[in-house]
Length: 458
Ligand code: BGC
Image (tube, rainbow, N blue to C red; front, side):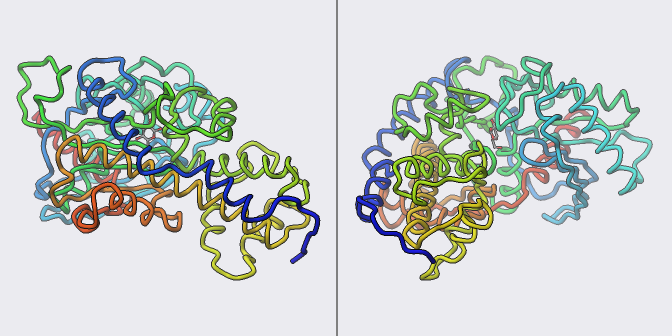
C-alpha cells in the first residue's frame, strides 16, 4: 500500500473532526426524544401533523390459530415480492414466493403502468404456482410501504411517495382501487382484502410468534415504525361506532423533524437532501436508511478529497457520481478488521476506481462509515426509546420486531442501538427490551391481516 508524505493535518485531527460532525451526545438524544413525544401527541390529535400517526384499522393481535390460503404482495423497496401462504394453525405455515425487479422507469413513470406490471407479476405467479382455489377469489394482503392515509383496512389514499418512487397519478388516490382495477383489466380473480404498511406486517408476523411484541420497525431502504396505541390516546379517532381497546398506529417516522428543529444535520445531509427528488421531506429517514447512508459517506469523503486530506486530492468518476457509493460497501468496509484494511482498499481502488490509496486513506474512510452507521443506529434507537417511553413499555419486558437490510447487515448496528438504550435507561434495559430480527415478516403479516379482514366480511 502506498505511503504519502506532506499531509499537513494529522490523522488524529482528521478523525476527531469527523467525529465531532457526526456524533450525537446522549443529552442531544434526550432532546430528540422529547420532540418525538411532542410530535406524536400532535399526530394523534389531528390530521396534517408532521408525524402523521396513521390509524391502521388493525385492532387485534394474531392468535396463531389462523388457517387458509392467502396471497401477499410486497411493494416498497428494491423489489416486488409475491407470496402465497398456507396458514395451518398453531403457528405453522408454508410459503412460496417470487421476487420481481422494479425498473427505475416504472418507479417514476405512470401509476397505471406500475399497477399493470404488478398485475402481470401476480398473474405470472398464480400460473406458475397454481392454485386449487379457482372458483373463489383469492384473498390478498397488499403490503404497500408508503405513507397511506387509511380509511379502512382495505382503503387508503397515498399521501406522498418516498424512497425514490415518484409515479404520476397516485397521490391522493386510493391505491387499493388503482391496483384492483388493474387486476380487473387482466381478469384476475384476486381481491385485495387488506392494505398493510410493512411495519404493521412485521409487527403482526412477530406477534404471531411472541405476544409481547409491542412495535414493528423497518430499518431498510426506508425507515418507519408502528406500535399499539390505546383508543383513548388516539384523539383524532371520531368513529364512535367502532369499539376497540387498542389499534396499531403507523407513525411514518421518516418525516420526523422535517422542520429541522432538533436533528443535528451536517453539510453532507443538507447536500443529500437538496439533491434528492424529495427535498425537505423524510429528513429523519435520510439520516438513517439504506437508500441514503452511502450517499452521506460519499459527501463526507469528497469534502476531505477537496481539502486534499484524502487520496492526494484525487477523486474518480465513480466516486463523483451521485449515489455512486452504495450503502452495501459500508458493510464490507466495516467488516474489515485486518491490519492492512485490504477489503477497504479493494472497495476504494477496484470498485470506486480511486487510483492510489494509503492505509491512512482507508482508516479515514472506514471511520466515516463507522460514524455514519453509528449515528443512524443511535437515531433509530432514539425513535424506539421515544415510543417505548411514550407508551410506558420501557419498564416492562417487551420485544421490538425489526426488519431491513441496515439492521441486518451493517456490522455493529444493533450493538450501537442497544448501547444507546443503556445510556438512557441503565444496564437492566439491555435484557428487558428484546430486539428481534423479523426477516421478511411483512408478507406473512399481510397474509394474516387479509385473512382477518376477509373473515370479518363473511
Ligand atoms: C415509508 C414507510 C415505510 C418505510 C419502510 C418509508 O419511506 O414512508 O411507509 O414503512 O419507508 O419501508
